[in-house]
Image (cartoon, rainbow, N blue to C red; front, side, top):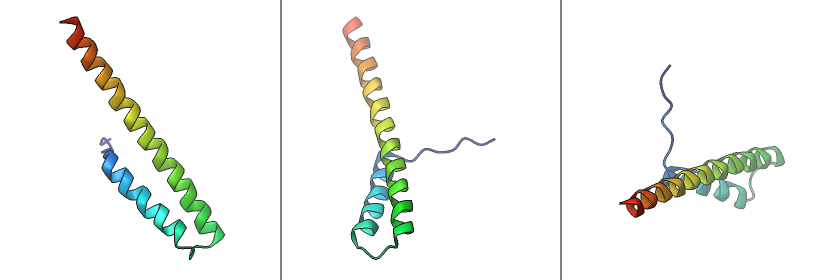
Length: 68
């Protein structure tokens, strides 16, 4: 089974921008809007996890630096 490549934070941000633009243009149906909203929530969850992991990496780096 191949490993799935995770998108970068910047790629996630670009995807979220597209979702927001579609929601803001007002041309989507209610069902489409709900699907876009769900997609946006999923993207923001992924972005939050990405930032949490980045913060944890920084903490570990700083702990190693202070230990030396």
